[in-house]
Amino acid sequence: MTTREENELMCRVGPGTPGGKMMRRYWLPVALSEDLPRGSRPVPVTLLGEQLVLFRDEQGRPGLLQRACPHRCTDLSYGRIEDGGLRCLYHGWLFDVAGNCMEQPGEPPESTYKDEVKARSYPLVEKAGMIFGYLGQDAPPEFPDWEFLNASDEHRCLLRSHIACNWLQALEGNIDPVHLSYLHRPLKQVDTRPVPGSEKSADQFYGDDRRPNLDLEQTDYGIRIYSIRRAPEDKQYVRITNFIMPCQAAIVGNEGRVNEGYSVHWHVPIDDYNNMRFDFVFNRVRPVDKEKYRKRLGNLTGPDGVTKRSLENRYFQDPVAMQTENFTGMGGSFNIHDAAATESMGPISDRTQEHLATSDRIIVRARRQVLEAIADVAEGREPRGVIRDPAGRDRSHVVVMSEVIPHDVDPKEHWKTRVHRCQAAE
Ligand code: FES
Ligand SMILES: [Fe+2]
Image (cartoon, rainbow, N blue to C red):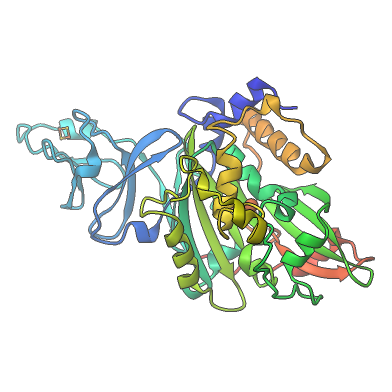
């Protein structure tokens, strides 16, 4: 059982909180590169309860600064991109991407006061169409060398959407293999693409065996999750997914159903009551149909990433569709199903009211890892998944699998044959 104290520790991520200090040990997605093309206006961003401004200077360098101008707190996201930085509208103070104050044009010419003023700034890394930030106070850790970040542009698709609840309950939906057989069950339009090693599709497996066997391994990045369903001819349908500390999951997704790639979801806390879901979809075998993904999400959300089906309109749940279309009656999008399941728990789920069962063992272990990481940070240790030694950047042991294999093959050995060595990162 999760106590009230543990729940508070895990869910509160503002500056100075134990959970916030833990989150600030990791590189986290801040935005998609396409949100910030060259020449674009600065973007107000809220991350871990901090009001920030994201901008790109004239040289194309991204910067992430405190949003309130250090002079008299005007919102810098209304500022001007010019002269090598971001200029505040109010009195023209100019800041570069590192937060240095380069000009205070209203001060006496001999003043050196600008050298004493700095905007709080955070380091960024831009990779594979995503902008990652490190909100810790010290030197950032090594950047993990994930396979998917080496996918070329046509083999990847990046999306984001706003989820109106605490990050942890949203994340937990990704590491819960059992809900696939319920929440996302189609009644009509079943995906018929066969899983490698079988003639049945993933949808058919999820529908036919609604009580998967779960197993797990603790790893240096989080948890390798095994869910195993019955398959014909004395075989097993093995699905391997991953919890990646602190708020990330590598799951099967659409490309993974045929074992050609997978999806990665981050649930980055905006504040304690909202999170931004970043999706990284990749296929190592063939190009990803970006238009399909974008159209699908575009139909679901507005430009701010907020879903049109929402808690306020009860996700337009249709009782007829519940009988004819799918389990939820909320349309075919997994995003909406997941939002309904997790947002309806309330802004922060009261975990003291839960009745955790055998099928929740992955969730239980993930919470334990989060709490361990919070304790590690509080006691001065690096938490699980933070890489300080450059030799430890390799993350090719993050394997996602959707495959039917003989019954006598051990999935805990089989995944090793499915490692894709990372190329040198971009
Ligand atoms: S408040 Fe920004 S320059 Fe004065
Ligand atoms: Fe889901």
